[in-house]
Image (cartoon, rainbow, N blue to C red; front, side, top):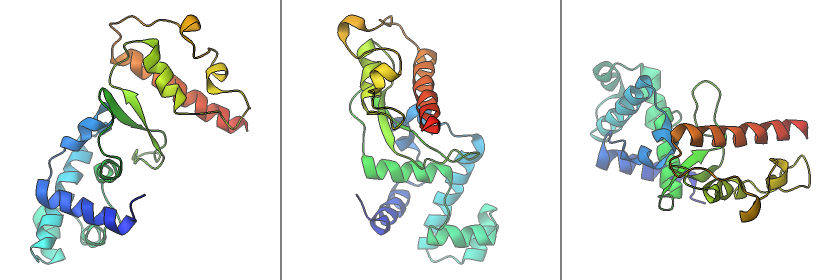
Length: 192
């Protein structure tokens, strides 16, 4: 695990080198699902970090980029950050997912969708049942029962009993499967 101070240093270093480049988002499910306001906040945060490193006063930065003084103060100490910075921190910790996969957060805050839980690797597209089984294997047994997740979800993880997905599955099918798994996991945990 990377110490928080080191992670914050790497975050600022990344922003100083790359500015508001959001290339890291391609390694996350749906590219972090940013709203237009998330993108604007990330751009402002990156610009503020650059200006802070040049020694510009916080009050001048606030006026220049249109952000409140308290926000600039929090940003200078990294006490608060935009949603996309949390994804950037996760990327700096985990690195690239394996080929053909992206990172998906299992937990996030309500409202702002800031990732707060662990991440799993999911395929960027479902091509076979093995893609779905690989996602399910990352969950492990649930706390609600001693049964493994394959049976808890109503199927077993074996070639002969797997439903087959057509080779042309689209993003919606992937969304459905992954949202179903996550919803059921959350429901199972509430039962315990």
